[in-house]
Length: 481
Image (cartoon, rainbow, N blue to C red; front, side):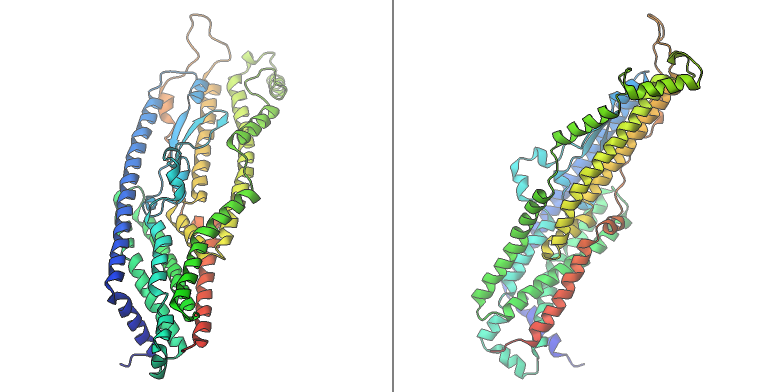
């Protein structure tokens, strides 16, 4: 079977890249660092998971073993809920180190998540986390540029391009062959990492294997497209420069632009174009709006006085003590409903600001493939901001249900008449605490995350199309001398 000129160029490029001991040593070193990062990530993840399991058990036992109490006191006693990151955090920790993992839930108040990794790791975490994703996104492209910058320009300097052309290879065959050869070599940095990540995540036993396989099935082709872009950029720059030194300098400039300059610039622009209020400012505004709507703890509050008057008229009684249910619980339930609606409105406004910042970052992936792959990788591994907001949403739903459940218990089982001195206290049986279920955080399905954040996917597809067009144009205009 005859071998085409394209296949010959691919084979020769592949052999040239593997011929040098330096290339093999570089590959082995990078893979070892990836394995090391996966090992560290696995140890860190499993340690965090075991601690959260322990804390969750303590919180639950403490909740269930509380003595007989007034339901409203239990509502203010509160509850702690925890977020455990997706096991693919071992591969790409994304924003997990910067976001809180614990929320304290209590009646009438919506607290923010606390205890982030970055908050207890000092300033070094600002320089980026050591992960396989960081190595594959930032370090490996630089290696590809160094290995491939001379694949065409050096052959032009050595006058071998003319010889290859005389033997029947067209400019298109040469450019495509070099790109495919370099791309296949670059996959040697990627493909060995995926089975190791799969094994590590399956050992974590925090989610089902189908979810992990789906996510990895999305991650692999995304990184393959990214490396195809890096390979194409390297060969096209090499084909359009007259010397190896100028080609190398241009490629290093592209790397600095894509990996350092544009990401930091976009981040700075997003924060300044769509500034978010500080935590203190947000909570102060929220508290003011809640007080305007009515204070359920103030018996003279106009809003709740109207409610009291309407109830007294409806049930034809003169005092709240004569109502057939606990009036205090009814008021607390109404107050919880009002405060929760106000909080959700403010949270949506804040979320809109963060969404605008994230959309700007996603859109920048259309001009920077490094941002596109970074955002896609975080989505696929469940370490993006959208997945974190789903944790906040689940926690708030649980908090509201817990508060209203306790208010219902007060309405049904607590008398309106205050106990006399020495009489039985206004409490309910502690068995009621056990009946309310524990909080179970559910990971956001990856396909739902991608549906809500389609721009990174579109950006990767766009860059693939741009690469194909650029290779075709470069191949037809290739100068042999």
